[in-house]
Length: 561
Image 1 (cartoon, rainbow, N blue to C red):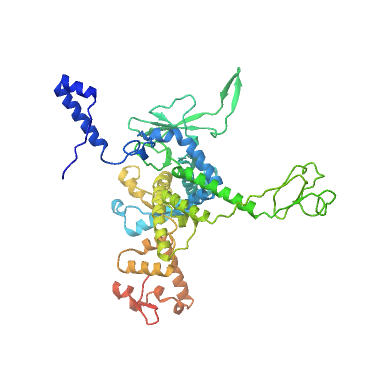
Image 2 (cartoon, rainbow, N blue to C red):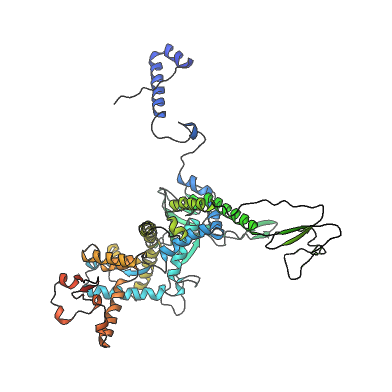
């Protein structure tokens, strides 16, 4: 493939060097040709190549230099948008509702092979552990502030992380009367971790996180007062800040116990603090909010119907006031003497020298909604939330709505896995350690071998399913996947409705038994009819086969519990 040799021009210095030392001159020309070759090919970059890029000035920095200087302002902006911008509130609430929902439930899944347990013994241990954990998690006593249970703490931890960029969780031991467990969960907002006022930012200590030579956290500096409360006391004429910082080791020096859980999403290697979820779209959200407010104000003004009456000497047909009409101004009232208001049905009297000129705002604008939706699409793309979900606007076809739901569910599921791994599972492991120490749960070898401990701590965290747009079609698809061994009952139950499939199956078996006992077996749907004794010799293929009748219904050759 032919190549183009870059063309360069020799200046006076180039010619002088070439005359004085041909070898050095040739090397100089060769270097200039290499620079010209590299600068004329490859990717288009900011600041060079094209005139359109010359105003785009960038620099490649360490992640801390790109995030920490603007972190506080980004955090404040994200919180303000959460409180005052409907679209931002919607984005964060969608995440909280779909990721956490009513809470992620513990499904104990121990490694039976490693522990050498039979299925019966393992099932009994898992059920007992889940019951014990529920005793702790369902009570507000698991919260250090006694306000929320564990499911609600999950939602708080996620929302605080998304809103502020990160959050911190402490797991102190606080005994409480009548409670068998002492473990408590304390969630701190991101502002509580910062450098003390007498400590400068360094490579080892920055933004309240102290690290070792490898960048791993060694300690967290946590302030004792809310960051926005500054209290001074005068001692010999010198003001002193009363707030204090406590250095909390990341891990216990003797036990190795994890003292602090730092909840954040890491986007770049070496990142010390997390950025708010809304940080990439702060400007567009704020500008879109201003546009919406201006459009709303213009529409309100355009909706007013106000009559202005110009005064004619000797004639005052309507008088100054109207009884029962609050919007009418009273010229005898000094408060209203110089006040003119536009309001629905308002009547205002003017002097003969006064006049009025009304501007026609032509609101609401027909172009506002298409533009607003276009901006929402950009915001949704940046946040990985389809705009149909962001606006709760499903007006497309079934296929388009389902595609949007599936794409959104990928995002929600990823964050659900993140929440389970970074908050739920570490908290459960700390709880299980206390339960074993107190003898409420028997786990031989728990403190002897790391592998044995991990086998006992095995768990899954399930939540609400993604929902169904067409329940009939999606349920039939689930049945087909199970029939062709592409999925399991538990997988489909979790995907469609969430929760504990095994517990649901046990309840269904009990309900079937009650129906049989009450003589209502003939009313049971054929798909859930209890297996009769003469059917127990059927093969699995026969027991799960479905035959379709002419009327579209299906019959099962007997589907056992």
